[in-house]
Length: 446
Image 1 (cartoon, rainbow, N blue to C red):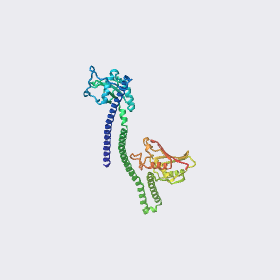
Image 2 (spheres, helix red, strand yellow; image 1 turned 135 degrees about the horizontal axis):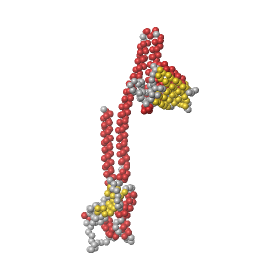
Image 3 (tube, rainbow, N blue to C red; image 1 turned 90 degrees about the vertical axis):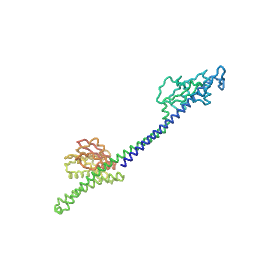
C-alpha cells in the first residue's frame, strides 16, 4: 500500500512538472515571437531609411542635404496626421514620409533594392528566414506590389508594422518573415534543452521507480522460492540423519555390524550432503559481499575426478556409467581443491538428476593451450535453447515442471562463481532429448 501511494504521488509530481514546463515554454515562445516581431519592425525601418537615403543621394549628388520645396498656391498639400491609421506619428517618421513623398515623384521606391538591403540586415542580426516585402494599401489591405511574385505561405508568419510612405494613407510597407520557427527555436535553445532534460529526468525517475519495484517483487518471489527449496532440500538429509541416528540408538543394532555400518554410512552421507549445500550458499553470499577467497594448493585434478566417479557410481539409485578420458599427461593444477571438486561434483550430480533411469556420463580432461579443460557430458533431457542463457543465473531453476528434480537453483551459479574466481570460464552446449555438455576452462600455468 505504501509503495502504491509513493507511485501515485510520483506520477502526479511528474504530471505537474510536465504541465509547468509546457506553460513556461508557451509563455516563453510568445515572448520570443514578440521580440522577433519588434526586431522585424526595426529591420524594416532601418532598411527603408537606407533605401530612401540612396534615392535621395542619387537625386542630389552635388548637395549635402535634401531640400523639400515649399508648397505653392497652385500646389498645396495638406497633411492631416490625425487621419493616419498607422503607427508613424513620430517626428523622424514624419520627416522621412515627407522626404519619400517628394523623392518618389522623381525616383520611386525600388522594392527589389529594399529586398537586398533587408537581406543584408537580417544576416547581420542572425535572422535566417525567408521573407517578402509588400507594398500595401493600409485602408483596403490590398497588396500593390511584392518583392516575390509568388510564395508559399507557411502556417506561421511574422508581420512587421506597416510603415507609411505618404500622408494620404494610400501606401505602406510591410515585411513578412516566412516560417521563422527555426529562429524562434534557436533563441529558445537553452530553455528548450533544460526543459527537455528535466522532463527526461522525470520520466526516467518514474521508469526507474517502476523497474525497481518490479525487481523487488521478482526478487521477493525468487527468495521465497529459494527458501522453500532450501527447506525442502535440507529436510531430506536431516530426515535421513535423524532416522539413522535413531536406528543406531537401538540396542539391537550394536549386535548387527552390517546394519551399524550402513546406518553410519547414511549418517556420514547426510552430514556431507548438508555440509556441501551450506558451503555453496555461504560461498555465494561471501562472493556478493566481496570476501570470498580461495585456498590454493597443487593437486592432480584427474585423481579427484576418479574419486568422484567412485562416489557417484556407488551411492546413486540409478544405473550410472561414468567414463573418464584423460588426454593429458600432466593434470596437476594449482587451485582450491575443495571448491573445484565440489564444482565437478555438482556437474555430475546434475547430469544424474536430469537423465533417465540409465545414465551415461563422459568426462574428458585435456589441455588446450594454457588451459586445463574438463568436460562433463551426459545423455539427459537437455536444456531448451531459450533457457540456455539463464542456466547460470542465481536462484533460477530451469525445470520447474511437476515431477522434476528438486533443487536450490544455486548449483550452476556456484560453479560459475568458483570457476571465474580461478580466472577461468565455463561454457554449455545442449540439445533437447540428447543431453548437455558443460566445459570448464582453468588456467594451467599458475
